[in-house]
Length: 140
Length: 140
DNA sequence: CCTTGAAGCTACAGTCGCTGTAGATCGTAT
DNA sequence: ATACGATCTACAGCGACTGTAGCTTCAAGG
Image 1 (cartoon, rainbow over the protein chains, first blue to last red):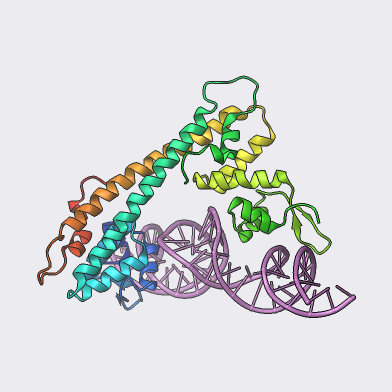
Image 2 (cartoon, each protein chain N blue to C red; image 1 turned 90 degrees about the vertical axis):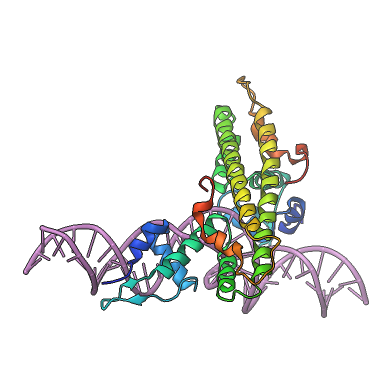
């Protein structure tokens, strides 16, 4: 039977079979053709779309954003601004997340250093430091 | 009636009322005393524990790790090594996450730059760049 | 004392993005 | 013809909550 099976798509994209079916249910992939026995068969267009979805997911776009990007692909007009907006929003999100994680790291280091190197009978300072939010510099 | 209501605890810790009840169900908070009418009343010990949980959550510990940390608090012996291990594991996780996000940011910037500044009638390069994983430097 | 309105109660469904299961059927190589 | 892996549907479960419905209780004002 011609076309790619769902497993072939999975192997090519690294997206699990169950996840592909889930994407179909979410409307991110069109209903594919079926064999006489009811198994899905895909063409290259579906393979490309799935690659697009997989890559966008790896970049942290959520499925709604990806659906929006796909819709933009279908209507090439006026897609410029919108696609940029979505991608730029994502950059802002990522930068924000990096910043917060950096503060987190500093705080965790503080917590661990509160006790490191000691091994006397005292209760561990790590636990105390965790309870004590006031010692944090800046919010997180 | 003496003691803090669940709403008071919520206000002091920033943890939502429903979340406090959820923590109770998960065993992170003990079953509190109740008024004659069945409402929860808390003492300062519970308030402190909830603050601990809230702070640890902000630092990204999951509820299982927090349960483990609480158990360590109850048995001060031998808690040193374990508490340090948990916290240090978390630092490693956070650093790893920062690194991956940094690669992500670079990739997103690449995607946006693929088109930025142009506004002719061409289909947007952002969408093309998103489909094209091969152009990524390094994995993500 | 009585009313009112906010706050609390339980129980359960929904969120997101899958993942895992059960039990059946299909496709293909030998 | 048979065996065996791949695929099918349908649904439950994950983590960490959040939201809803339909109640009851508490505390303050009149």
